[in-house]
Amino acid sequence: MSILKETTQNEMEEILKRQKDYLNKQSTKSIDFRIDQLKKLKGQIKSYEQEIFAALKEDLNKSEFESYLTEIGILYSEIDFTLKNVRKWTKAKKVKTALTHFGSRGYIIPEPYGTALIIAPWNYPIQLALSPLIGAIAAGNTAIIKPSELTPHVSKVISDLIRSAFPVEYIAVVEGGVKTSQSLLKLDTDYIFFTGSVNVGKAVMEAASRRLIPVTLELGGKSPCIVHKDANVKLAAKRIIFGKFTNAGQTCIAPDYLFVHKEIKEELIDAMKLIIREFYGDSPVTHDSYGKIVNSFHFNRLQGYLGNGRILTGGEYDEGTLKIAPTIMDDVDWDSPVMQEEIFGPIFPVLEYSSLDEVISSINKRPKPLALYLFTDSSAVEDQITGSISFGGGSINDTLMHIATPYLPFGGVGESGIGSYHGMSSFQTFSHYKSILKQTNKFDFSFKYPSARSGLKIMRKLLK
Image (cartoon, rainbow, N blue to C red):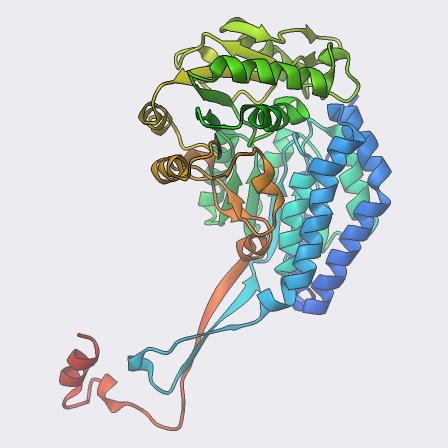
């Protein structure tokens, strides 16, 4: 029996109407109001920490350590950074005046779009629902949040957390399944922020296009991890295993496959095997802190990949607990089913290479990835890879960590997404930048009017 509270279409339309009416009162545009709401959100997350931990454990078997590291702690950091900077971000920005506009002043004013619809995924269900909300609040919007139905316990906690502190005309939570999401996409919201799969992202963009609603799409793709022959192998192994198998590999920016130079392939694989044992013990499927697959559908999908190559370590699974051990797989090629789509699970195919040109060519033949990771001690190698391959963002000599700093915008490119957020980028994402030109009344240029005798001559000089 589902624990989700379904919301009817009429209820959704009523929520939107109330939010539009609330926006018209101009309350959300007050900077002090926005700051108060951000502080309130942080206080709510703090007061619900134990409920969040319990829900993440129930839905994804996340430990408290992992939950704090990858979900709650990131939100605290994001809120604090926003509180520190939001007054500066909201100020009108003066711009230079063109010669043709002598006597005028130009400036740009950020204003809220209006009502933002935030559709969150299941893999980091707290962070990826509330992190966009921080930007929406800072920019002065109202918001409707749709948590994932695949993590129902977390969905209920989000609903309780929001409803106990914020009026529905300001921030609302709408629970339900696919039909609920489809109904929400029929509403005349002012902005849509979606995190999820490429296929669903296309459907979201299609729905938004019917009403010309701007969108941010945080999607995914097959993110490569490249380990060059000059890398620090032991350190690379630890950081790669951390990035790949956190949340049982169910991370949109997890290394999807490994591209390793043939000279260090065996050494790196041996090092990764040791790190897996260090992190998750001899039997990861029974390790209390190792995550589970979100549901049976995805478990069966991932289990089907286990026969696509030669298993070097792992391969064990428990259907009862929906756990699949961290698995490293060799003897795969680009035609293998495991290489056809984003894995989104604890299976790590290995490809070897001899030259970087081979790596660049292989990656560039495929859709642009959301993330790319490179391990090397060579600045020349770093420049070659980052300058030759298009990807959303990434890390050099690490994995995942570029997502955790508010100073770097996070987003995809091509099939891996549209737009970005985090830090100032979140504020910018949920803001429309309105251009204003204020002209002087102290004098006027007659040459711009059609009655001017030498208007064309002057315009040619000014606009040559």
